[in-house]
Amino acid sequence: MNQYALQLGGIALDPLLVLIALMLLVLLIAMFINMSRRRQERAERAARASQLDGELAEMKGRLQTVAEIAVSRQSELTRSINQRLDSVSHRMGQNLNESAQKTTESLSKLNERLAVIDTAQKNITQLSSNIVSLQAILANKQQRGAYGQGRMEAIIEDALPKGAYSFQATLSNNMRPDCLIHLPTAPDLVIDAKYPLEAFEALREAQDESEKKQAMARVRSDVGAHIRSIAERYFIAGETQDTALMFVPAESLYADLHESFPDIIQKAARARIYIVSPSVLMLAVQTMQAVMKDVKMREQAGLIQNEVTYLMDDVHRLRDRVLNLQKHFGQSAKDIELVLTSSEKITSRGRKIETLDFDEEAERQARPKLPASARKKAKPVAKSGNGKRADMLAGE
Image (cartoon, rainbow, N blue to C red; front, side):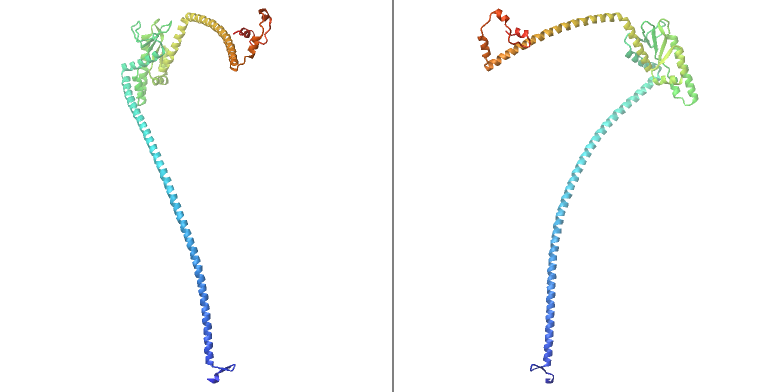
């Protein structure tokens, strides 16, 4: 052992101990290094822990902010949803009310229209019954003649004065026309209201050309026979006109005659019988009414001239009376001017009394009075614009 001892400054060192001491030193150095590493790691861990704590705190703050924002957003969303729900419910209520009002109005209008429809249906029912009755009337000859007679009488009564016509009057040959128009200074005009309808009905109901030809031949025969009957019965020289009117109470029949049977119209014209519809009869009656008025005015020309003379005398008297009234108005205007002058003087004296302004009056009374002849020769100091009228009113 001793041969391996080390000498250090005179001190002998055991190698084993030196080795052990070195090993211990290395171990201590390693432990120190390890401890320093651990301290560094702990410091790094502490720094990381503090960083994590900061990040956690920051995340906590952010989470709290996000939570607050979420709460506020949720409250705003809830409030917005409530507002929208209120608005929607309000609009829905308004829409329901408007819909209810519109429905009520529509139902009321519908009820009104239904009432109108009911009334129209009643009118249609009544009209259909009237048409049925009219068909029954037109199917009977006597009733048909009465219908035509009624229309003709209504037209004549509306246009002519009483006494200008006669219905069912008897002629000298014991014939009774439907109407006589009494023309002034001329024979009477005959109007016949009968007409054959069966042939026209057969013509309208014809299905083929043969039936149509037969119906047209029947129309010509019936109307021609009626024209000859009027000419033979009602033409009396000196009593009736040599012209007569055959009244057709339907415009459609009158149009059919002129459109499809011009030969019948010409035959009637040659017989001096004119076929007239209600409108043509109105025109003829109005023409006769104008002729009657003209004749009556000619008959009354002398009376009209006398009345005009009386009217001119009344106009002259009215003119004289208006001139007298104008004179009275002129005199009244003069009297009114005098009254106004007097009222102005009274007003002036009242103002003097109110203001106790009597100096001018005292001076006028203090002046010596002149004789009457001197006063006449004396000139007035001032005159009013009315001249003599003001002098005349000086003592008033």
